[in-house]
Amino acid sequence: MIYLHGFASSAGSSKAAYLGGRLAEHGVEFHAPDLNLPHFSTLTVTRMLEQTRRVMDTAAGPVTLIGSSLGGFVAVNAAAAWPERVKNLVLMAPALDFNAGGLSGPGGASLADWKRAGSLNVFHYAFGRVMPIHYELYEDARRYDAMNADLKMPVMVFQGRRDTAVNPTTVEAWARRRPNVELHMLDDDHQLTASLPYIWEKLAALNLT
Image 1 (spheres, rainbow, N blue to C red):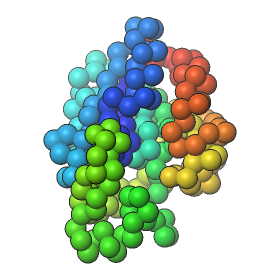
Image 2: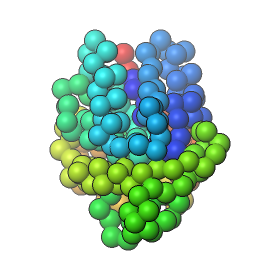
Image 3: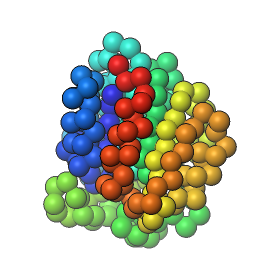
Image 4: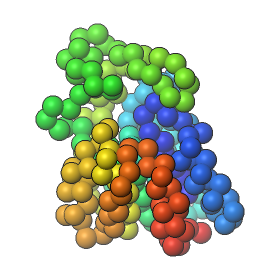
């Protein structure tokens, strides 16, 4: 199982630690690549996809991909690009739409201001400090289309109804038009912290080995 963390997060996030711990108890191999590497400021979706593919290639067979927030966007595109390598897709509060009208930059910043400056200072929760992120992240993300991705494998989606970072309506609409998607709308926020035991219960029902 491969866990892809969200924007300004890390492989050591609370969700990664929780799920990794539960999976270890069940003897399931777990990988959580640090998508910040080599530098957070130069983060792009293309780079994250390349990192994901390298981890996938170390597995003996198809993997279960878990993507959280921006990691969900990456997971969807990885599953669409290499469907033979993904047996299950699990999305947690996935940031699916980079083409939405009125989409803002990180922290609610104007996309125009971000583009004009070339970079934007954001608080990185894993590093505990403000760091720059280049506009190339947004430009590169627009090359990929998670909203219309062709996915044939089973997909499980967990989305908080009180999420203010990802629009729950967008996620729900995306899931409802796909018969292979099992959608769980939860009374939770973007972090889904309170829902982790429930999420684990559903994950444990998958054929993880």
